[in-house]
Length: 165
Image (cartoon, rainbow, N blue to C red; front, side, top):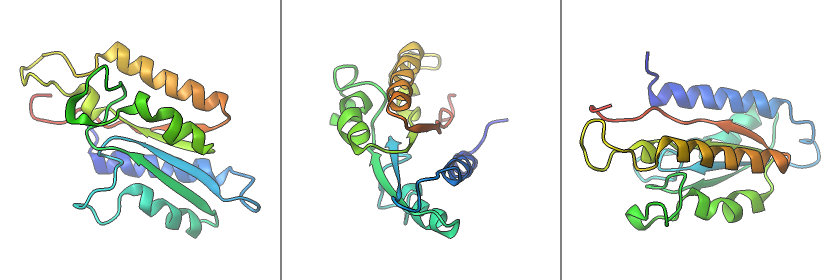
């Protein structure tokens, strides 16, 4: 059974709350969280508050101080502009060092997948924008680097969208 985006967000938020609850350094320093993703993460005028804007209050209600940085860009995927420059957006590998690692977060929520899996040709079974092996390699690169930095990572990747999937 496919999960809806709302269910995925709820599961991700629950995981984040549980993970943040294990943070022992909160008395001295607010927990730093980076939300890194595509339009499912980015600020949008069509949504009053995206999840990264809701997290500080949710965590505060649990007694946890947090700074949440939104590093979401609409149209972005896990590749780079060189891989697919569609939409003129800087993509994940182009932004990772500056927008995520340099922030020195304790937790990173990574939410990519819709633009990676999108079939630009519109043909059923056509090639995805970012081939699955590349998508997997990109996620492993992000997770490995962040874990080496001491960050905890939550992968919150939604299912493919559209009637042809």
